Image 1 (cartoon, rainbow, N blue to C red):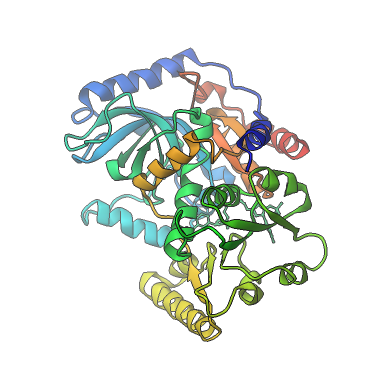
Image 2: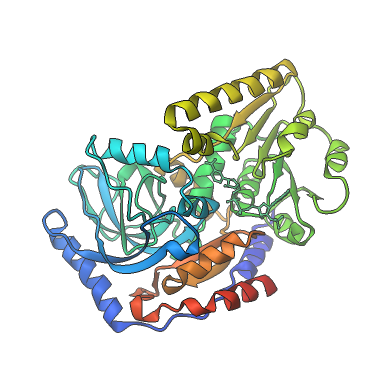
Length: 429
Ligand SMILES: NC(=O)c1ccc[n+]([C@@H]2O[C@H](COP(=O)([O-])OP(=O)(O)OC[C@H]3O[C@@H](n4cnc5c(N)ncnc54)[C@H](OP(=O)(O)O)[C@@H]3O)[C@@H](O)[C@H]2O)c1
């Protein structure tokens, strides 16, 4: 893969589609003031921060901007407090806005608060953060205030559509120095997901990929564009499926063979290719019924899907019944496929700062580049959700919470009248 070619491709993709918000000097003072107070008194004083929250589950209408969220502070020796500079959205944010995973995430929240019923709302969405450490717990060894960091935030923790976020040291990593915060925020969640799926479930790693044939179904979005680059950096041969208008993008980030799933019989076309060692499925549905036949039988080949019914089952049936039901379903399909000589697995996002350290090295070596499709100012978070909800992602949607070192997007700049215009601009680009 030519990194220059990819860089050109990705820079071209990095399109600020949305009108910049007007700088709010009062908002700036407020956010900076909040951070300063935290630096001095984080353990003793409660202060507020700006954030987009939801107070109930639903559609985009439940997103609410407020400057009155109690800012997080350091509550344990291993925590770091991060000033958010940029966040990005993932399909999970849309699902969580509608209540997806709420039973399991509430359980985790309650366990984290040591059995005292943690309140469910308000919830702050946003699973990716790139920002600057402003405070550290007494046991933190890898970070100091002023460090530029990135992280993927577990879904049971408060997210990054806010001025500040706290995470455990283990979940955080130093940001690649070659990336801006905007670029960096596009990577962590898809990277943590892809690595967990490809390594833990798919059995791949940087030493085992040479000569491996990998098929990625649904490769033009966040997980896909990252996975292609990771697998190429590790030496694998990568075949992907995507729409015809995404071919330039996926080839630009390194895909060897591209199959347009919108033209003709995708099963027939994939069936004519040499069989695969690993399939990563980002789409789910019918695919899992027929793609198993594309794996090399009796060779340890694995199918890994990111679209499992686990969370929707626990939501609809309750935690215990949902787990048991999902476990039985998984076992049944896995055993059936094992009889045919292939492995069937579910892949999941896993929080992991050290894994991001490795990604950071690959990024700074020019082997992985961010693919940012659209950027929005903090004032336009609902428009960013609309864009993502429209589907057909070509990389990531990023929110600039702080731009050029200045807080922006606070109450007086919020303009929700432009949703239609924004969608049109993004789709026409
Ligand atoms: N289990 C987990 O922990 C976990 C973690 C992260 C993500 N996920 C899931 O993994 C999936 C991918 O995530 P993502 O962040 O990459 O989503 P994304 O950014 O929305 O990308 C999805 C991509 O798939 C393409 N697509 C849709 N239907 C397709 C089809 N039939 N064949 C080929 N491509 C198709 C879309 O473009 P076109 O429609 O234009 O083709 C889009 O580019 C999502 O369902 C997400 O919820 C699961």
